[in-house]
Length: 300
Image 1 (cartoon, rainbow, N blue to C red):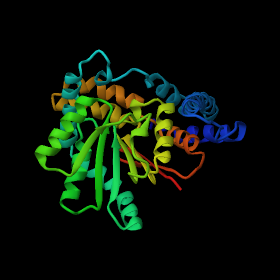
Image 2 (image 1 turned 90 degrees about the horizontal axis):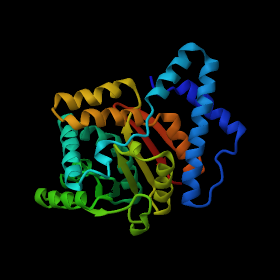
Image 3 (image 1 turned 60 degrees about the horizontal axis):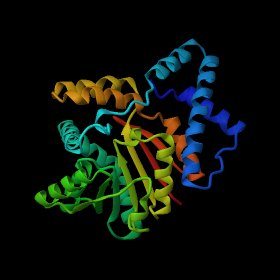
């Protein structure tokens, strides 16, 4: 319901006709500012389009606007010690495991893995950004260890404590995956051409539109052939479902954080706008695979 696709794609079409689209940018900083500005213009245009489409569309637009927030999740607060944050992301990872989400995530990623492996005649090399507690990377590494998926996986995060925890866990579980500290906005530390797929899971909404665009652009500059972004689908189901799931499993902080995250999830038209400006092309796709919205960008 909160995708607002009719109004959103009408608004996006209006912007394409009225403004330079995709707009010019030359530096990562210009890209970030341009995308943030265009997203704001898009939301204002969608507001006007919704009014013209009738009361039902406009009511949904007003409801969506009432939900939107720039509030950070508790686990992102700089006031919380890293040790406590690690405890939080481990709780999130436990909830993902209990809900059996990782097998579904792998099924979404698998076609891209096999596409690369078939083309390159070797395992696809994945770099996951913002790995957190490493749950998805571990699940992919398990499949690689079992030789049921032609893939090599590396994880990363900007928080040193997360990276230490993940490397210790990988060693204890004897999994073929390593983690390192990487700033997703400055991937100079990543050797160019060392990864085929750059993956972000459950974290797109933690970045502003401009920041996400920078990550996409840098993924291409690092020589990746595919960018994959997996995040919660913007809708009433997750707006209520994530907090309820956390409540049922007794993870109190995730009740509020889950609700905050669901208010920040991107709609498909928003991701389309971000991807097109970041890549200066229309070679991308957004799709719904419950409970995910999947952004896939092949770099040609």
